[in-house]
Image (cartoon, rainbow, N blue to C red; front, top):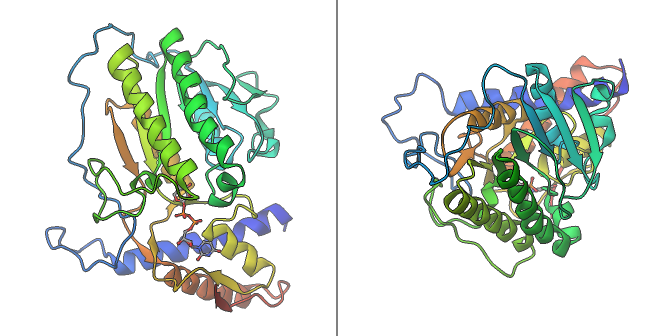
Amino acid sequence: MSRAFRNRIPFLLVGIAISALFFHTFPIVADSSEPSATLPTRRVLLEDSSYATKATSKPDVVRVPGGVKGRRKRIVVTGGAGFVGSHLVDRLIERGDSVIVIDNMFTGRKENVLHHLRNPNFELIRHDVVEPILLEVDQIYHLACPASPVHYKYNPVKTIKTNVMGTLNMLGLAKRINARFLLTSTSEVYGDPLQHPQVETYWGNVNPIGVRSCYDEGKRVAETLSMDYHRGAGIEVRIARIFNTYGPRMSIDDGRVVSNFVAQALRKEPMTVYGDGKQTRSFQFVSDLVEGLMRLMEGDHVGPFNLGNPGEFTMLELAQVYVYTNLNYLASSSSYGEVSCVVVFI
Ligand SMILES: O=c1ccn([C@@H]2O[C@H](COP(=O)(O)OP(=O)(O)O[C@H]3OC[C@@H](O)[C@H](O)[C@H]3O)[C@@H](O)[C@H]2O)c(=O)[nH]1
């Protein structure tokens, strides 16, 4: 068994366990008219958004819709060598599109897109979106920004610069070449929400001067810029508010809870639960997110759109999933040795 494949197994098993827990908690036969007993939530996603702002009011400038049907699309993916970006690139290439990846390789890795390097429909450019760039494309997926709290807090000024100047540059490009633009925003724009679940019309409760503000507020400004370019210049914009995501190619040292627990289990270390572990999150598999991003780009919904899993779990429940997964994995793998099933609260 190759090392890469072995490293993927925990993600796979965790995915299966999370799905099992989800369907156990929210059986599909449940009457959807009955409000389900919900856990105390922090960032809950409402599946059926009433904020489906269809592009009814035509912008002043008549534009040719991005991605004209019937021919290969030219697409740029900023941050395309990262965890989510590289999966998106895989799907776009598979669909037959021509893809240019722009990445400064801060959290992106060449290995994530290595398998496309010989493909004539693929191009990798090492470039920081903080600097302008000129390209001819039909669509821009703007993902570039460190997304793990550990990474975005590492250089907060750079993070906010990436969100503000990077987004400005890419919107400027979209305007110049008349491309459709999709911003990957985040559930963190809701901050510490006072409303549950969070619908897209909720404006959030964000600390403007906290250690997470470079990301939260940076993405909020990026959303503002996107809508201003839409209203002012007729740019076709899409805004995806992404909830917690996991899957293969997540860096093992990413710092987010899923990769931390996987890494700790692999290293036979205790799993670190921050606080009392009662805080909740929803977790979606990366391929579901990518599907959502592509549908959002191709659809006509203007304005923010939540993309995530409606099922919520406490971090303690997640830790239990790992313990359960580890025990099962141990039972099926004699060569693997002991795996940590210990949880510590810090
Ligand atoms: O080892 C750990 C890591 C994290 N946690 C906890 O797990 C929860 C989730 O933390 P993560 O760092 O995985 O992710 P966060 O929810 O804080 O932020 C994420 O939210 C949505 C995405 O858009 C963002 O990219 C990402 O920042 C937090 O309550 C955190 O305190 C642990 O208990 N143990």
